[in-house]
Image (cartoon, rainbow, N blue to C red; front, side):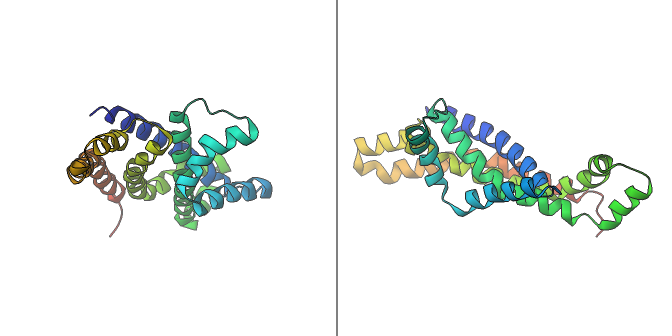
Length: 208
């Protein structure tokens, strides 16, 4: 129970920044400016192509040692690592969903003399967001599971305290890990419900 606070706060902050990075990177990938498009693509491929654990260690250990850049605390290092990693994955959902909106919608908005910003805000984005919702829910559950990695940089989350209990009594290790599994499952239940709710919302008004 002592570790729940860290797990939940890391999840909430990681989700907030992860979705923010996803929208920024996804929209930048569609930019007509080749510099913005290529630099964003580099970020996406780096964070999708490397391990989250390695990214976590880089942000917490390597970057401060090599460049003298301090992220403030291990809490911020954990949040930023998870957010950047999942933001890269979810940016492809943002980009793909926007591209999946029928071209006729853009043509109709252009015929109504809408600007590019109005087309995106009023026509394309509201349709694309419905396609993003189910996958965003799935990645929220993935981020909850990823919070267990922050124990590797000394954060006192559920897994950290579980490790202390296990080390103090090795014979109780199966029970301890079973309890950790149950804790994560209980925390995931509201997110599973939310994901199903989001799937239902995304289907409303869509022709079968």
